[in-house]
Amino acid sequence: EIVMTQSPATLSVSPGERATLSCRASQSVSSNLAWYQQKPGQAPRLLIYGISTRATGVPARFSGSGSGTEFTLTITSLQSEDFAVYYCQQYNKWPPWTFGQGTKVEIK
Amino acid sequence: QEQLVESGGDVVQPGRSLRLSCAASGFTFSQYAMHWVRQAPGKGLEWVAAIWFDGSKQYYSDSVKGRFTISRDNARNTVSLQMNSLRADDTAVYYCAKDFDHSGYYFDYWGQGALVIVSS
Image (cartoon, rainbow over all chains, first blue to last red; front, side, top):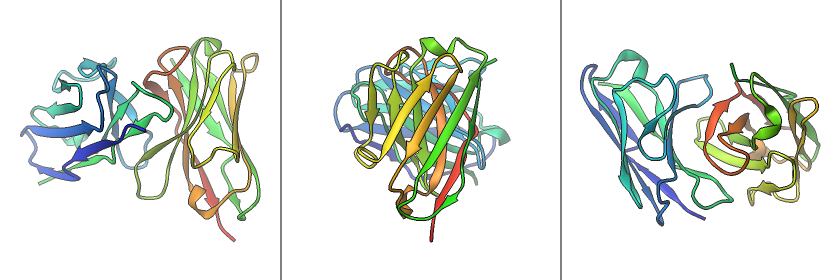
């Protein structure tokens, strides 16, 4: 099983600032890495797949990067609607499909 | 547009059974794999089960293998999760999620979730 580890657990950021979230895989996941956003009381929403491709309707301030086992989600100029929990997921080797434990982006 | 609507969530006693359903619309259901993902209260996302577009393959997490069964009806655009021998640690919101393709990729659409509480 590929273990996904996210850091930090919580990130305090002021509106308008940049947020950088990290995700590490226990083995290479090639380019098969996705990011999801989840707001309180809502279902997760696909943000990024294939490391860096934004899903339909996702603003350009969200970007993904990385390779192999180290990945980053960057949110430039945080908006109020971006405060949420973010999960990375690998779909390279399954089952199981595995998620990181999440990073909560909160208002500083 | 793509829509997934779960139903069947309830409060059940340990050891009992429950069946969740997910009704899909807005896409050609028979062309896509489907998944169930759960989220225990205050916790992260845990993949539970997957079924291929044609129902030919099913996969389960170790935590539910032998107790849960995923199935689909492509004529009715529904995917189901039969949950037997429920335990307290099965308490969670269960999400139905659409795969990007006919087999194992990322999950591009999610339902709103169905709450299952296992308690005596």
